Length: 315
Image 1 (cartoon, rainbow, N blue to C red):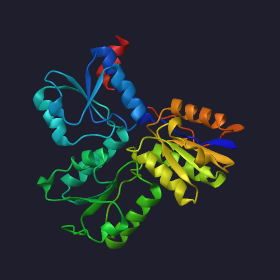
Image 2: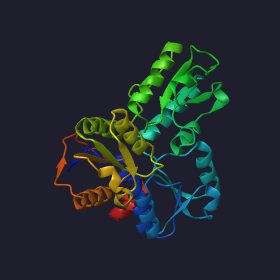
Image 3: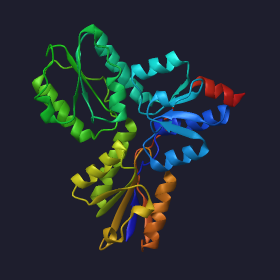
Image 4: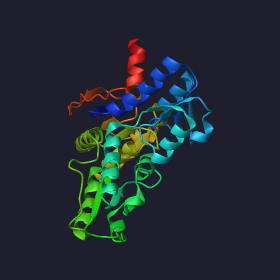
């Protein structure tokens, strides 16, 4: 039994930045530091930060007056931002810059009076934050669609003045199918200059396609509430390869490994490399003979920390 490791895998620049914002805020201001929603969707990361003094809350009314609060990498609505300002909370924004880019697109289309179609999963924090950028006072409306079938039910105010944007962590294949349906029904629809799906999501999906061609089982390290991790599992399965989403080594079931000769391992963008190493160790203990790192797209993207945290660390 051989183990093949996908590349790239694990943390992306947006996740690195979000985690570092929480850690530096704790170092600078001391515990507790409040975080609205899980800063990234990974149980291991959240538990570690909680142990350092981070307090994760669902809404701002759980944050005491005068406290420091961090917005998660998935972004928040304008209503949440206004509430934080009204209460005078010290805010650090860990929203991924690529999500912020989508927010800017949404606001631009709202001010132009267009209708906007957001392609994404209902209930996901990123989708809630993105839809919360919409300002209806300019006359347009925002619509959420998940599948090509949803496009048939759209009733925009003016089919000639409509645009679309997407959640950043979707499957590229699924998103392309929805965009194609939108273009068929609304030939005048406007889209982003560049794909909204982030570079890290695309790179990890490309790596899983390669992995699926060479393996007879794929393990995706990531938490169940991680959108990009779920898309990796689905992508492997679409290639006809059994695939499982696991939080860590303890989730591996011996029966999954029976008769397998090449096991692929990858990790979602919010899963730390330490969990991958534990999975590899468990597979070695189960009889894996070799571990091979596959070649993949190199990533050297970094995102700056908020100015106040950078200055305080330097001081």
